[in-house]
Structures are given as structure tokens and as C-alpha cells.
Length: 151
Image (cartoon, helix red, strand yellow):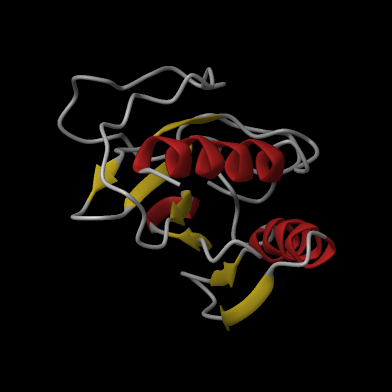
């Protein structure tokens, strides 16, 4: 497997995870980074996930990853910044973590693979693209369910 193949597999993991979340959330691509023999794909959730809903959000993802035979490595139960870290059967690290203002971040890290060029993801984001901006803004899109109780 080369880095482009790893990036495509990472996109598949992210696509399949995000489609499990109901009601759906809006997300945009985070930066893709490459190392000497690895690649990382990221997705940033632009829907506000309230403190009251973070446990449910993590639970949906945790259940799907377990059903997909991912090995759950660590769960961080921090009230403000919870996270879950897992590994796919192919050795890819996958995580869901929360940052400020209820913003959720998905990340998939490949194991060491053959060096190659890596193209941008072909998956269309469900939120606006922030390409060209220095930073992706904090979550600002609201969901009647996921944002419930958030200011």
C-alpha cells in the first residue's frame, strides 16, 4: 500500500463513520499531512455539539467502531474535552476528540506505507470549505438535536 492508497482508505473510514451519525452533522476537511511514510486525514465538525450531547455523540461513534471490529485503545472521559482512540484491523489509528466550543475532530493516521504523492480527498464536505483560510473557524452551525442546550 502506498500513501495515496492509505489516504483513500482513511477517507473511507471517515465517510463510513460520519454516515452513522444521526441526525447528521456538518463537517469540512481538515488538513491532510504526510510524514516520511505515513498520511493523516482529518475532518472537522462544524455543527455545535453541546456539552449535554457529547456523550451521545461519542457513544454513536464508539458503537460503530466496535461493530466494525476496531480495537478501542483509549477513552478519555473528560467533561469538556472527551475523546476516543481506536485502531482499524488494517492498523490505522482513528480518533474522535473534542476541542473548544463543542467542536469535534475526526482523524485517521496510517501506519508506515510506501512513499507516494497524495491527492486531496474527493469526498465532498457537508459544510462550507474553509480552504485558503489560515484556520478553520469554531463550530457555528446548529442542529436541533446535537446543539441542544448549547448557548
